[in-house]
Amino acid sequence: MSPTQANSSHGVLPSAPIHIALTRKNHSPSRYCQRPHWTLHAHTAQPIRVPCGRPRCSHECRDRWAKRMATCLRRSFSVLPPTHEARVTVFAVITDRDLSQAITRFLRRIRYRLRCLGSGFEYSAMNEWAEFHRHTHFLMRVNCDLTREMIRQVWSRALPSARFTCHCAPVANPGGLARYVVKHLNDASKKELPPSIFKGRIYSYSRHFLTGPVAALWEEQLREWYPAGFPGGRIGSQSVAQG
Image (cartoon, rainbow, N blue to C red; front, side):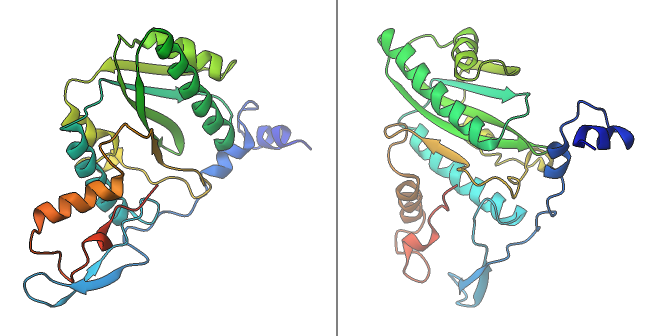
């Protein structure tokens, strides 16, 4: 019996891909960090528990990562803000590998398209999930008018024959966007950990999109907050975990 027939006999629509149901059987993510470390409190010198801060570890760590990433983005955007933000959501049965390759093709094609218009192009791409369904936010810095229609045209060539929706608009509030794109928000319903089956990168950015590497931006921020030195004497020990 085929997977489709098996699903149909159990009341599942024949068109429903069997592996979509399987991806929803991931273990519930932990609320608290599974790999914390210990350091000394800045004022009391008492040992305190510090989450690892990896965005895949737990909700606690994802919140910590989002706070740090938002801080780094806001710091960079005060000097080099993005000009446009875009989002692409694909509604098709597609592997993470194929979707990641489509994103790479999209970025290459949009760079070429903008270069033909005499514009530079720097970007950040942030993957996000809603009920285990992945979509991607793009922050871009360009020197021309970037429209939803241009995003639609370029993406449709990067991934033909797959239904999708997209959005594109100029950036009005870079600081607020820095918080939103990493979901450094109070609304817990907007925050979802990547599925355990996802092995790719959560975010990426072009060489000159930020004023420096994320880890360097975080270290600069810590030195600004703690000019006398970070507790324990290791400023760099609290760097942002990469996606």
